[in-house]
Length: 308
Image 1 (tube, rainbow, N blue to C red):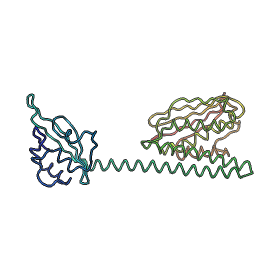
Image 2 (cartoon, rainbow, N blue to C red):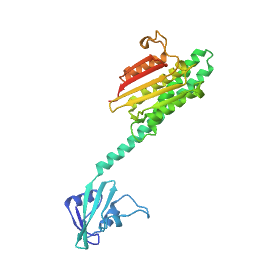
Image 3 (cartoon, one colour):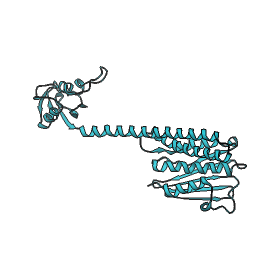
């Protein structure tokens, strides 16, 4: 604690206050010095002319909070004017050593920036891989092999999209509805029936952890493409994506009004690579379950998984 007189000059400094300013590089007594002058001399920060300086903040005339920082640490100062009757008779200044707090804050900022940079580089690397695969696909004469490479490019793009979202996010979560919008747009652009199809959204995912968002993006991408390439290839006009989410659980329903599934269809026995990927990611990564069945109007895929 520090006591200021009516002119902002230190009239008393507690042992802790003296110790704090000694660590900041102030040698000698504090009494008889202006607190604002002391702060200016030990602070590493040089303030611009338009900023409120220590002379105003630490004058003792009004309630103010200021921080003094240099290589020795950081001190938080809270100035509380003392009023007697209608007259100001000085001020009390409460000091708090926030060196460790500010150090941790800087570490968090650095860590956050590093993580975003990692996601950005992963996204760029995945895009490079996609470009190489696409180039290879154009050089292959076998249509089935070329199609397989294009499918791989599409799947890699889904993962890259999640990393792109994380690279621009201010926290460690994914705004998955934005991801889904882009996945849907990309899927429609690849469909020859784009002009005749409508995709209906119901419900919201909100923010998801990356460990969930990445496999979920792949699963939904595969289910959407499966519906567009098979269920809605020749008939039907609508694909609906419904989401029902709580704090601990999420249900996703993707339905179309296309031709439906073959009568003898069995998801567990399906040789379709896309559906095998969906089933594996659902069970192993999302720890959920998936069902795929025909309805009166087409095909329904239902995905359930925990969020905790």
